[in-house]
Image (cartoon, rainbow, N blue to C red):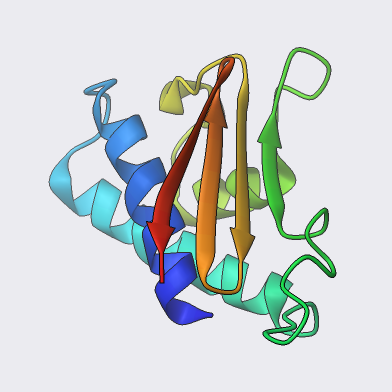
Length: 115
């Protein structure tokens, strides 16, 4: 679970970093906070033998209807940064599953890592 979370956190941090709103220390603090929040969130929803079980729960989602993902918002708040300053895309979905992290960014689909 930790490898998959690390892949998702690295992707999100690099995406946020492109906005150039945060310094290195803020980004490192955000990475730590987001990792902790995701470990806590996925703890009872991680099924290596059935990787698609609970997939919806492990999804990080930003879209036109839901501009704020609660997990990202919690990590941002813990870091002391404004959610809006992360300048996330209007459409972003990240599935964090056992052995795979996938992302749909706008209308394209990318597998971030196959563990």
